[in-house]
Image (tube, helix red, strand yellow):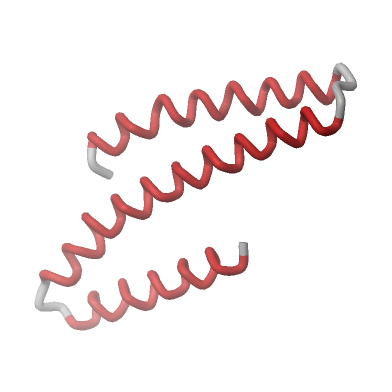
Length: 92
């Protein structure tokens, strides 16, 4: 993974970690369910952004390298891998 990507992800993941701890505290202190749901929605949204950043990194590094190579098996493997990942995204 590119260092630039790691630098983007670190603070985001730390923030998400804090949000999840906050949600745990909300549950333990019997906070209003709608408030918990709103915080869960924020965490899900933040995780999706992390997901986008990781996917972009993968496309710009692993997949791009495979496509530039002369190794057809590697190229086909990366395409198949991407299709599998995209199918999982659609099921979410």
